[in-house]
Image 1 (cartoon, helix red, strand yellow):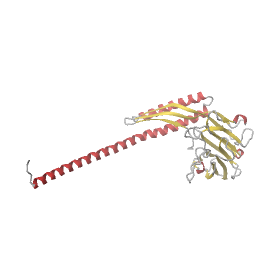
Image 2: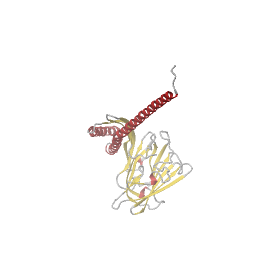
Image 3: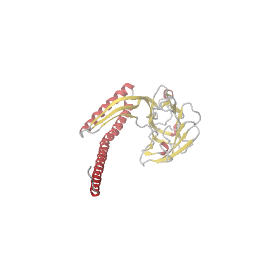
Image 4: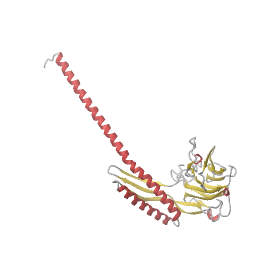
Length: 339
């Protein structure tokens, strides 16, 4: 065995330490390079997905407009409704596809399925009473919730005049669990005026043991002839109304909150009007129709009326680029509240 002196052993240790240092520095560079590459890749994926998500929002909006148009104009039968909606979706797919192709993308939208509904509306501009002048009546009974959603959407009132000026005389829209008594398991919206251009909305959410009251006021722009109240969208003349959405406290007072109806279950709710002579104008809503749904309109006169409708539509949305494939089913139900 070679006999190493103290100086030679020291040199060997120094060389070994230097070699280890070089190895550690190299490993650090490799790891940092990998992390940097991964970050760039993640940023590239996020940037690439922006176009897919933006186009998705456009598709949802356009499909929703097509559903609304079909419900208004092609409601003589379920078959006509579906055919009109399918045709609108095909047109949308061609238009968005051509637009996307200019930037090297492939976009496709195809009809998948729908849920049946009924559209209830008054369009003659009279008081919201029945054709026979009844002021307190059930508009529709036995409405079922859709899984994860409300079961009533696009409920809008265009009021040309509101006579009530206080809570006691207010026009009231009531949503209550079918079979509940008193005010239990109900959501109520009271509508009245506090000035020539100002509407007041008061909602009362009743669970089994407590009542939550929330108020909001909105003043319409001068020159407008109607108050546009979107009960399911939570706005008055396009302005958010805390009493029709999420209260400042964080409490949920969206349309139908407090009725405690199980989504997808057998429990249902009823929608009723009270003091309907206090509001003049038009209204419309779309509800999910199942065998349990009861329409009372045939026995209460010529107004309001009900027609066959689509409650929602599901489409398959595909967005392809050289770096990204995005494909998903979109359920479109325009004007549906969160609860």
